[in-house]
Length: 386
Image (tube, rainbow, N blue to C red; front, side):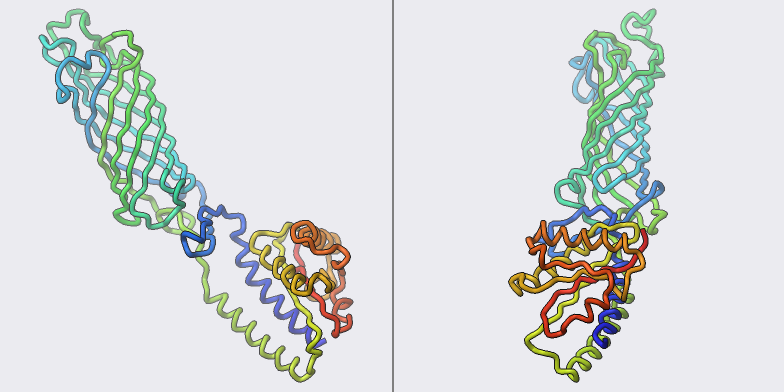
């Protein structure tokens, strides 16, 4: 039973490496196109509520449109504006933001009269959509990102000018108002560092016709805002970074396991050389490792199932394939049968391996006792909890 000793050792070490990898199997894969990246699929870190928050400050200007828009020049309708925002990215493609905006407005009723002024505070909730990540996949250090956003909120107007030519609010209303608002906008982000982005943002805001105090019954007044600002990213609780990141693995752990596997391979080769096995026979061993509480084949283990399929195809599907437990006899026969039948159905349905060639055996010693001169493929299943 020398061979079984080494197979069990190989399988145990393999199971350890697979367990480390399987910890990230439930992550969302955001970048899969290896033909463009030249890399394998990257798996995004899992993040919680307190991760990927940001805050920002913006300054700029606005252009009022709506009532009496034609009165005065284009410059007459330009005014200063500023904003503060707080938001969170739920994924590299979708986020939420709250923005508090201040507008210093100017209204015109007739060129014969001086302009009047009023203030407005706006509070909006925006849905953010990273168009760059949606189309090109997420890249941790990308310099440029294009963001679209849709928002709903309200604006509070106040501080209307007192004019002697506006007796009893006959030309414009001076009462403070709270009005519903909607908006759509586009933002560009330029990465200055891991913590800071430069933002350039333009939005169009629709507000009720009463916004500027002049009622024209056209339903909507509004303003176009343009902001230049800085976004500051808060440190994540999960990984101590400031933005989304792909899973990193400590390769030193894998290197130690690989060294041990290489040592065992060398010992096995030496033992087999002494026994001079029949060169016309072949036994191929494959391990399919399952996560606890699961009897489904995950993406990382599909390649191992395919390895068994390739070996069967090399033998024109004329060899027997045994599915058995790793390391002896199963201690959970029900779980073993579920996992074994999952592999069997995959071999039959997905790869057209003949059903009569597939055998399920709960006791590995039975398989090991078979005639060594007969070529076969053995698929081992790890023990686990369910």
